[in-house]
Image (cartoon, rainbow, N blue to C red; front, top):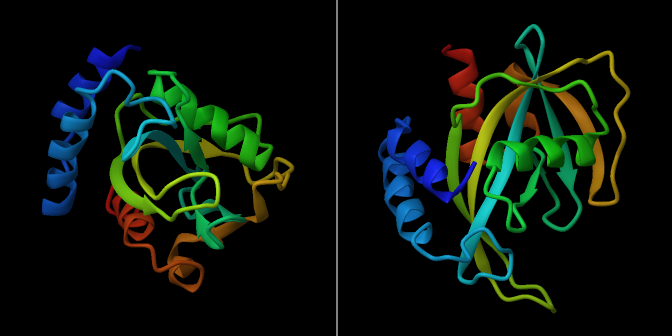
Length: 178
């Protein structure tokens, strides 16, 4: 998958609301830059995430992100890889230890642009996050990576007890309404 395919996928993506439609415009502007898939590109770059749901579609697997101190879906930097679904699957495996993950669809499930605060070695910037819906087995052993404090299956109906991130709740609503 190359940059042109990502642009095509973003253009054909139907946002759930006006905010996502605005994100589409901003993604397309970012994707004009040749280094949009590199983490060193500031003020922002492409990332890929996996919204992992249980086989019965009642729970999601969240990681308690160590640097951000928040419960989020697994994901990370593209680091030059323009196959963002592959990035999302790689990050899901690395951050949860799950091996038997299934990409529910090659189509984009959600998009988001969110700020990342300045760190001592890197300036504040935005993550242009492309999310994919992924299915995982609750029977498989979970591993907590060094990037997280914890990894946990959370009932979709109890998600607000773990996060108030509007984009995570939006993904939950998309699963619940499908």
